[in-house]
Length: 423
Image (cartoon, rainbow, N blue to C red):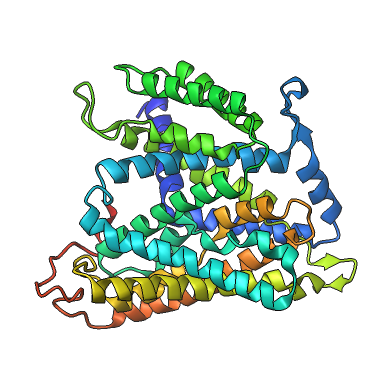
């Protein structure tokens, strides 16, 4: 084997490793744990100094701290991948048939509405009305983390369960993006917003051309991101818009849609670099403040977010699904029963990435930021641990021939962890 062939094989193996759902989850957890330990160690000042280190061209108003580059810049790559995934699911995937997509879509709505209601209720009862702005923090789901836990602990369960969770989480992310765009945007500059839209439009033309060139796409993407950042709308929205322009159907005699190509090209970087780096700079919250060790845990916002993520998500997904399947002709997909939604509801409570982002947007003054972030981490860990236990319990239980109670025998769609599921 030549040196060039060995290098190609090594890159292929590295790309395959970085693309695995389990890899992304482990890297996210490791980055968050490292940041949390560092921020509460005797060397915490060096972590703060690293987060506050500013880089970028001042002439373009882009001289930002590293933590802002991670949240606004690197996370835009993740949202581009989300935009590509949304486009594919809407055009050629699980969301293209409204009747089949209706149950997970409505479950996503229930799983976002109830956490917001519970958060608001807890905050109102506590009297800390300044924290109300964080109502959206427990509404989000981390796709990468949730799918990683399902892949590790859901072996033997129907593959349709992964599709259901993916559909629910994608819709959840779409709604979270809408929330960020509407409720966490202020002082919009219409001129720069229009300039960003023009760059997105040009990106869409180039990406649909017979031979789109990276040296055209990359500058257009950077221009769209830069103008979106300057407009007052969160810069990650540019990533979603750019991703949504990628064609999801085969063009110009190609063998696969370009959504697959761009997803495969950027997902390794998104999973192995962008998300862990963002987690590293966002999860490093100090549990020690001026009132004494662990005083931050006494903030009402901590309890409100944990309840929203762990209880609100679970009950919201389960109750909405139960209502829809009992009062309408809609049914769960083949091979999935209501009992399978116990761990799925908990998996949606793993807010992590998007929840951490919304926490930063909700509390820019810092008064509740540490409490909100530590609550997101705690809620995610509790939800993940409970989901792991229930996934193994569910996998060991005997399954009926008609799990979704639609009167027809379920079709064999393979299981998570099998060759068919992993291919």
